[in-house]
Amino acid sequence: MTFQDGGSFDSGRVRKRTGGAGKAGGVAVGGGLGIAVIVVVAQLLGVDVSGLFADSSSPQSETDLVGCETAERANADSECRYGWTIESLDAFWAATLPEQAGVAYTQPGAVTFSEATTTGCGNASSATGPFYCPADETVYVDVSFFGVLRDQFGSSGGPLAEEYVVAHEVGHHIEQITGVMSTADRSGTGPESDSVRIELMADCLAGMWASNAATLPDPETGKPFLEPISEADLADALSAAEAVGDDRIQEAATGSVNPESWTHGSAEQRQRWFMTGYQGGTFEQCNALTATTL
Image (cartoon, rainbow, N blue to C red):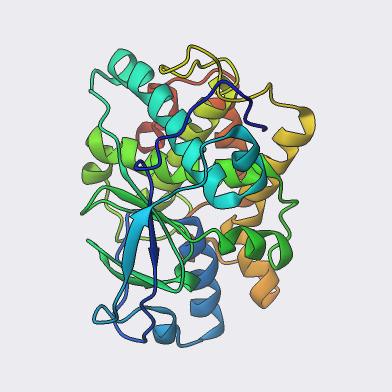
C-alpha cells in the first residue's frame, strides 16, 4: 500500500536508537514475528542464540525519527514507512477500539533500532526482529528484518508486507490494553495453545486495520493516509503471513512439522485470520482466545 500526499507524520512519534552491541541477556516479549522465525528455527536446530541478544551495558543514542515528513519518503524508506504506519494505526484504533471494545486507545511506544536495544522486557539485538514488549507497551522494529523475511524466508516483500508486520505488533498492544493478553497462558505450545491464539488474534487485528487504512482520514488533514489496496498489495501481506507460519518455518528448517511445538500458528491459519479481519471482522470476531476452532 502506498502512502499518499495529504497525510502527516510527527517526527517525535517514533524514536530511533543506534549503538549497543553485546552478547548478554535476552527478551521476554508479548509477541514478535522476528522472534518466531529466529527462535523457533534455533530451537529446532539446537542452535545457541545467546549471542543474538544485547548487553544492556552497551551505550545507545536516541533521537526523533527525522526526515520522514513526506509521503514520498514513507514510500521510499522502510523506517519512514514504519513511522507513517504507526500514525495510521493510531488513527484507526483511536476511532475503533472504544466503539468495539469499550476501551480507550492509548498509543504504544514505537522504536526503530539497529544493532541492539534495551527494553522493559530485557535486551535485544537486531537479530531479534520486530516485537512488542508488554512491560513498557512499546513496539520495537529493526527494519533490516524485512529483507530477511523476503530473502531468507520467501516472502514476496512489498509495502503492505512491512505494514502488516507493524500492524501485527500493534495488535499485541491492543491485546495488552484490552486485557486479552493478561488472561492468556502464554507458557504453553501446540496448535490450540494460548500462545498461538494470541498471535492469530494479532494477525486478525492487523487485517482490520488494512481493510480500513485507505479510507481512514488523517485527523490532522482529513485526507486518507493510504491509496486503495491492490490485489498485489494483499498478496504481499498474505505472503508475509505465510512465511512466518510455524509449519512453514519447521519444514524449511528440518523437513518435518511438529504441531505440538507451535507458538504462532500455521501458515494457513495466519493468512486466514488476517483475512477474517480484512473482510470486515470485528474486535470480538478477532478474539481467538474465545474461538472454538482455530
